[in-house]
Amino acid sequence: MKLAQPLQVLIDELLKLPTIGPKSAQRLAMFILKLSDDEARQLAFSIIDAKRKVFPCPICGYLTELSPCLICTDPHRDDTLLCITEGVSDVMAIERTGFNGRYFVLNKEFTLLKGSDIEQIDVKTLQEQIAKGAVQEVLLALNPDIDGEVLARYLARVIAPYGVKVTRLAHGLPVGGDIEYTDEITLKKAIEGRKEF
Ligand SMILES: [Zn+2]
Image 1 (cartoon, rainbow, N blue to C red):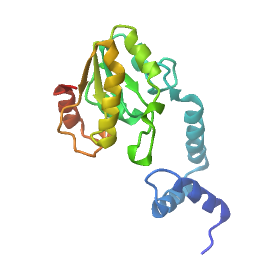
Image 2 (image 1 turned 90 degrees about the vertical axis):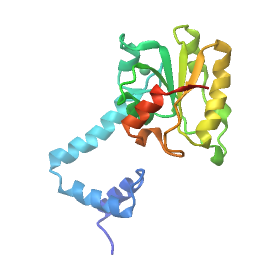
Image 3 (image 1 turned 180 degrees about the vertical axis):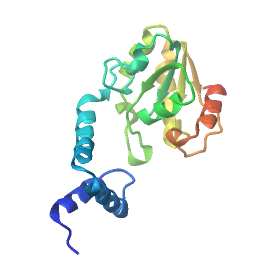
Image 4 (image 1 turned 45 degrees about the vertical axis):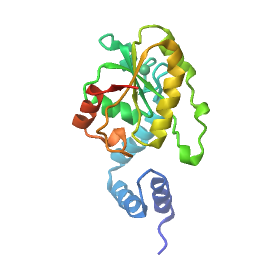
């Protein structure tokens, strides 16, 4: 069956989104077609607006519309504790636990099995952060999988010359799981029980 061309284009675009398969794309497209003109315009505008105004914070890498971001400029945060995460979604998950330190987001998909080169990870900004002197502990909040393990060892080596304490999340996170999908109680316990690396 041939679909109306604009509808097919919409479905094809939705199909490009992560976790969206053909059935979901079709369902979303149908939902969008039922929106009022105003709602549809608002949806389209929100995509363009977020794309245009949101960027990674130059200090921590968290997504922001202000430079630096609200976490970096928050005076009530603990400057001595720096948490390193692989992605922005990990920060969102860790924030839900009430963590009050600062962050450094790698914003890099490092996949050992796909042959990513670990040296490509930009550690210069991280080193600059630590070199400022306030940081006393770096918490490696990396995913509990092989890539996270390799990444942790690499970062620990990069941080070693600065003489700060390096810790990692306690065991208890599901192995091979993602921090961003871990419930906040488990994650909070993993942060509280963090171990020296
Ligand atoms: Zn920031």
